[in-house]
Length: 394
Image (cartoon, rainbow, N blue to C red; front, side, top):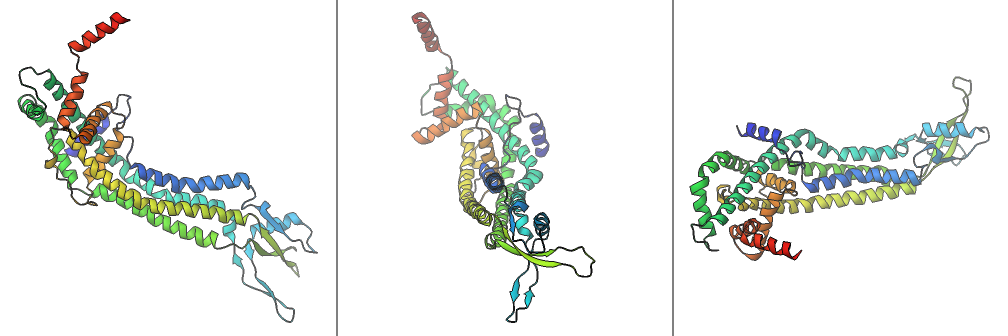
């Protein structure tokens, strides 16, 4: 039933602009890591190809011509297409010894390698979108809808308290007056609207499936960062050879004696390539360290997000037992964290959250602070008198 309710609310939940409430289905820091890991290689290779257009192209080759071979175009094209290095050594008797060919295709594939690692490091985000994004949006929307309804009811309750004339009003009895009015006027509405919502919160407090998925995404990213870093370091940084001996055939195949010659070709912009790899390895290292830092930061923020329930007097925070373990993240922590991020432009949430933050800074009870804000917004005789005075002055 809870799942059906979540789907129903998600299908109809809209903001005042007509957009779906949940626009962020992943934590902001995950998006930053993905942007750095995926965007930096694409940006680096794009800039490199603008300022060094011969990087990893045939035009970057420079081959030494030999006496029987005068066709430079053929030489360059053949050596580019047959990118193999032959180690040449002369014995003490002057006999040429040719070593086994070494494949050097990675020089040609350098730009494609950067695009490949960008795609690989984008896989955690792709997997998240395909496997979890819709489910997270449904659950976060259900949480947000419940919180929004509860906050609206809280402001409505405070408005009734401000307008209530029969009770003696003091700053000490705000909570007592609020509880009395809840019991008297809102008990049936609370039972209808929030009984299932409380059970949903309790269920999410005992579940760790979503929290594990967030952690697994970061572990997956860490593993890929290590693999990509090793690949780029071993293949492109350690190999600083900027030449190769090309085995050049300059007679048609099938002739009695096939002409074979060896020419030395230089590989252009190897230093530029190694510089790009150095920069990218630094970015990978920063992302690697950053994941550990933001995981600790997000764990703290997710636990703090649980305090959002303190903004809703009709929900007892103690009924939703918060985990005391620092790393004991539950699904409810993640969902409330996402709800807080998606509520950034919601005026109702901002009003109540402002009151909550002020109460924490001043040690004034939240109920007193929200009653004060509501009383400021309520129209009274003083507002009318002030408006008349201003109109007269104008």
